[in-house]
Length: 112
Image 1: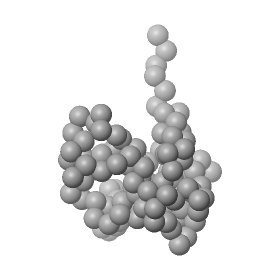
Image 2 (image 1 turned 180 degrees about the vertical axis):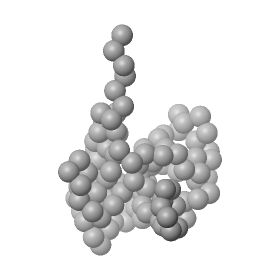
Image 3 (image 1 turned 30 degrees about the vertical axis):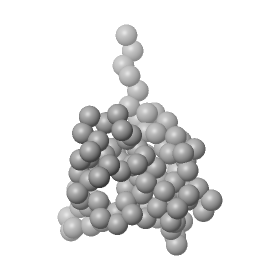
Image 4 (image 1 turned 120 degrees about the horizontal axis):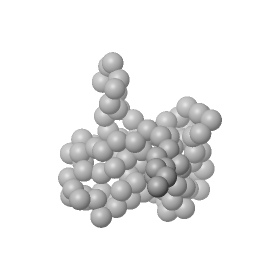
């Protein structure tokens, strides 16, 4: 199954001392070389951080969050789709675009 850019799924959170799950926003699209088995994702949280992107209620096209959610565009990883197990929803393309543009700010191309 291929997941869709903008979907939010629950999956394992790496680098935690105890097993933990968190919501992940899928930012890759069908051009990902292994798109049928994995996705590039950014983390989401309910904790407000200075560079976090707030998710307004009307940005949820499907599903939603009972608690204010924030996208953490600096928290990026690749996750196997078999490890995603519960869809939380789908976010608007404009918010996904903002998250991707913010992610790019953390990895500028070198000069020259």
